[in-house]
Amino acid sequence: MTKETIEQVLKFRDERNWKQFHNPKDLAISICLEAAELLEVFQWSADEVWCEEKKDKIGEELADVLNYCILMADTCGLDMDEIIQEKVRKNAEKYPVEKAYGHKKIYRAGRIIRGCYILIFWILIIFWEQIDEAFQFVLRNIHLGAAIVGIYRQDVYEIPPDAIRELIINAMVHRSYLDHGTIQVAVYDNRLEITSPGKLPMGQTMERMKEGYSKIRNEALAHAFAYMNLIEHWGSGIPRIIDKVKAAGLREPEFIGGEVDLRINIYRGQIDGTVDLNAPNTAVKPPLNRRETADKVPANEQEQQIYKYVSENVGITTAQAMKLLGIKQRRTREILG
Figure 1 (tube, rainbow, N blue to C red):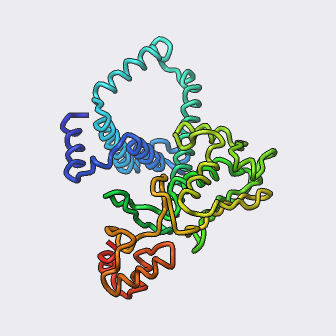
Figure 2 (tube, rainbow, N blue to C red):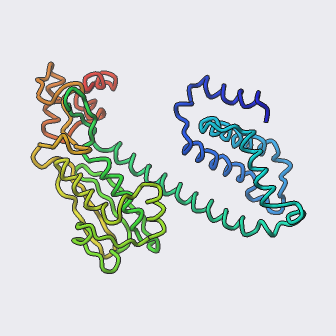
């Protein structure tokens, strides 16, 4: 690959100010996704392994893979020529000509192992995407408010995001994969509800779970999540969730079932309207305007309507404010700040 080609790829990125979005993790995922699209070209091709009629498509998908490889090398500060030449040197030592010439058997074990690693990697990507999708779904459907801490404004959700993420990960790790059910995440007017299929493991009870006793159902998945820093310590998840929710001024999470499935409810709306602003991820009633403190007097009739609504509910979304005031989105956002 010429220096001119590499510079052209980087120029394309820089002209669009995309470098800010590039990091090794996301670029590595992108390489795998584009490689999967390259593999898709050969899907259902039976014995036709060359796919001559699809040569243009192969070139297009291969170019996408190489483009992302160039971007990742640049992001990581690696020189393409140097790393390729170094890899060729290592392969020459690992597979000398006199032993490898014309033989493919020596590659078989390595291919099986690499295949297993790739399969595990893809499974973890799928799990992570599902976790993130469920997490973002919850955040989109609960209230986002604000609190003034010192001279700074902090955006805060009515339910601590860390507790939400921890619950979803917990459901993913501890569910029964022999059960045909699925993990269900639902947001109702008064609660967040997460249901995980499968009864509690033998020896586990609701009370012991709340106290931090851990009975891991899927150890391989749990270790993989721990390696990805998605799990901190065995048994610490549920007690930490309870502490975060209570610190946010909410009711203690409700644990239901255990015989067929496990449902955990986090109820929306604070118990007494008071919160500890020093606690992590504290949820508070959103003030009238995100740039104002909660005790500031509303300036006009529209703000008074919003203030009344917020006083009677956990918070208010842009859509709810638009419906309440009968005005367009732009004006609503100006009022909410």
